[in-house]
Image (cartoon, rainbow, N blue to C red):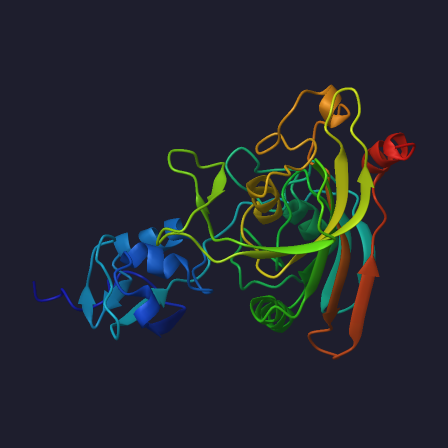
Length: 326
């Protein structure tokens, strides 16, 4: 066991990061703790690093199941980004702004942001690689330029980084909650209060990699969404009415708005995963009525205040037009 306290020397290391376990994380599994760190982001990546002997706790190798203790020093050796096989694809992009550092675009519905199992082509990343020779590399070769994500069937505004410094500063701004991201969502039912906040942690649903849920366990991550009512629509023959809301993200968890609105009893219209009702009750909409319509931030390099607003796409606007008589 002479090498039990050193990192596997077969790996080429890009950088080393260290984190001290706080009181609030004591008793958490090592892979869960690491997955919550901004530099790691996912539990699966954390588990891979642990399995590859790239992680030590107070200088000792530990398993994924190790329960961390307050004050322990977790050292993570980050390997260089893996070589990608992604191909540039000449897919039209709806670009609203571009300079040497950033791109602001409106993503169409049905487009996956970055490659994932079952989606190796046709993604926003494939399109970006064909559009620009320079994209930020801090998220690895599978996610060049990506700062934040939208679900496949969520449309609207996104910002992409063309340089590492822009990517780092934008990611820091998201963590500091100073990027203004607002969405339009049509939900089932009548929301009585004009405004509200959903402050409920989110975790992956057990046994289902595609679903998230509100949960207060150790694996859950904090999540806050505020909403403001923009319009209410009376019940109809096939439904119990609708409310058009503006949702603002203060965190960026997977499916956050969709999960939070379902949690308070107002699922998003057309949501195939968390929704409810028949096709008529959803106005025959077969994707979630969720659109990123406002994006405001400070330019990561110039310091200029940036503001963008995006109209509803045709399929969502048609639903509103049908409901307007109510």
